[in-house]
Image: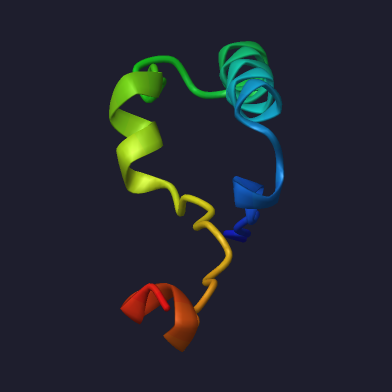
Length: 65
């Protein structure tokens, strides 16, 4: 059974903590030889990142009147 979690809603520190806990569980319960260590620097580029809220430019600001 394969499940997925959306960890992008968590702060970066909580995401790291969750991945560390996952690695702990894999080491504790996983099969030997199938354990993968996750490199956080690589993962943070793959995981969805929050974007800033879009704020349209007002016409008055564009033309400086």
